[in-house]
Length: 270
View 1: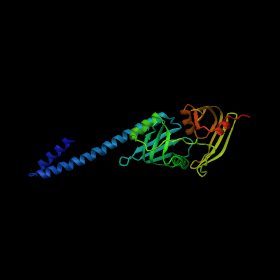
View 2 (view 1 turned 90 degrees about the vertical axis):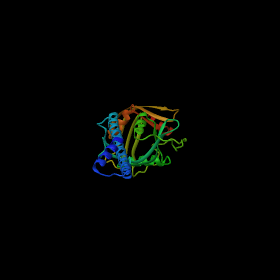
View 3 (view 1 turned 180 degrees about the horizontal axis):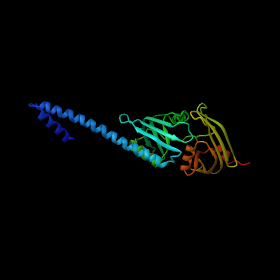
């Protein structure tokens, strides 16, 4: 940078017969400031482009692109706002996600990643409802299980912070009896018998219902009966392949908060 300033001054000296020390100093300061701003701008753009391309290719490399594909991952050079566009097989439109701001950190027990001060909007109302409802139930925080891949992804965008989030024991989330807003999610059918399950969900923003028919599964519990685990699921129908691909990527397992009533429903026989 100093060589650019010197070059600028030499050109100015050759172009003028008289140059005062004050004007020379002011020119140097002005150019130095402008050069710093330009360097900062290009440096930020370069950093964001590197992150964008890394995440674009990294995420696509982790998922089945015939079911889920990142079409766009853009970080605004001025605000650092993030825009994502995703193809999801089974949806009639692409999912767009706008993250205007967020901070994040890891809980003391290293089990969860927590988002604070999160401003996020999605163009599919049922997905927006799920995220907003999760935050509402946790005092404005969004907590997800810790994952090395997600940690690395977030850290490449911005470093984690010391959380203000306070961990406390919660009642298990009852996935069947929770009072969902039926404008966004409506359980049209849930039937389980002899290790088979039939589910029909009506979701606002999706033309097609989510229909799932599970022909068989293995049932167990984990974490001292805090979690219900469904393993080795075999399906006859699954109308949203993108969701199924996520389950497949988790060793074909589904983990749900344990409640005795739900466990008995899933374990009942004729």
